[in-house]
Length: 224
Image (cartoon, rainbow, N blue to C red; front, side, top):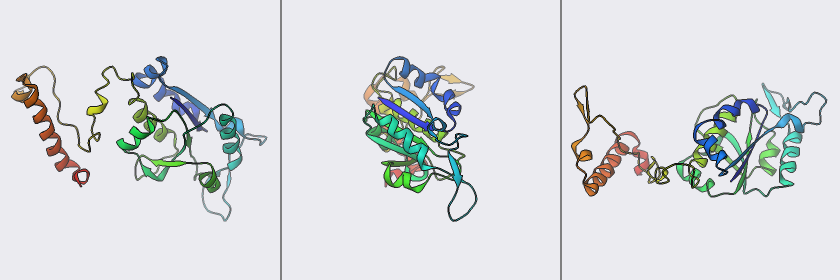
């Protein structure tokens, strides 16, 4: 899988992609992550990528030309399945969305900044808009990192135990059940006896019941 990220703050993305699972996925050759500095595609003398909004109003707007130039440059060598814009008013990122995107071959992620991007970019270039929540951040870089993490961990070979991702919360529209590890008793707090029984069928039944119970308590909307 190949993911190209367009941003005006490339250093902000270095940390998330240079450690843990995301770094391991790159080293294994399971995903190619490229970060593109939008300023390099500006034709202006001082490499500006933003300007005042027509009609007035507070905040600057990202201009269409450098974004268009960057996307065209990337498309010269790659055919993309989706061009995603991280936006607070996009479709909500869910496990199902992550599952769908993990099946793609090549995607571009555009990180907005300032007051947003020229609307013509959304109208003519973007194929999908995704939000990570009903709130506003300073830019799309952190949401882009969240999106990448949710996708890449699903790629075959990324996790040491490939069944692990299948047991995550939301994969079956349920929150994951409680988990425990050694010691079996600590400070008088005990692990449920069923988990120590060795009876796989009973353990799986217990896990499923607890998943439903926890979902009913914390996220009843998922059961609707």
